[in-house]
Image (tube, rainbow, N blue to C red):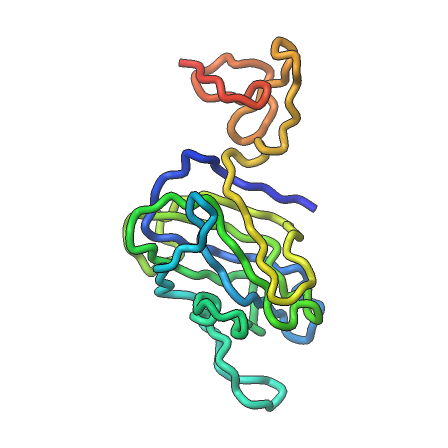
Length: 219
C-alpha cells in the first residue's frame, strides 16, 4: 500500500475544486471495469460538509444497463445529491473520471468525504484507490486547464472499505511524504527533509526544510 497527501493548514482558499479519479481497487474484477461511490463532499475547517456546493461538470455515464434491466440514472450528479440511496456508477471506467465543483465563494477546505454505495460490500473492487484533488479561483470546464492547482493526491490508497453507505474522511496535509516522517528527539542529529519528503544531506540552499517534524526556513 502506498498513499500520500499534500498541504496542511495553510491551504489557499479556492472557489472551484476538481477531483480526478485514476484507478479503482481492481478494474478487472468484473466483466466491465467499474467505478462507483454514493457521495463526494468537501469539508470545511470544522470538517462539516459544504452545504451550498454546486457540481457543474463531470464524466458522463451512458444511461443504459448491459444486462437488459430497466435503465437507471447513475450519472455524475447522483454523487452530489445528498442522497445515499443514489450513486455514481460508471461501468466503462477507462482510467479517468473527473468532477468539477463550485463552492460559490473562496473557501479553505480541510478535507473531503467519500461515501460508499448501496452494494459496496458485494462489489468492493469498484472503490476508488488513486485520485487527485485540485483548486482554482478561475472558472473553467476544462479538466486539463493549467489553472488547476493540485492540493491533495492519493496513490494506491485502500482506505475505502467493503461496507455499504459508509463515509470515509480524507484530511489534506502538506508535503508529499512529509506526514510519514518519524520525528527524532535529538534535534542536532535529526534527519533533514525537503517539502517533497526526500531526505537531504543538509540545508545548503535557500528554501524550506523539515527538521524534527518542524519547518525551518533558509534565506
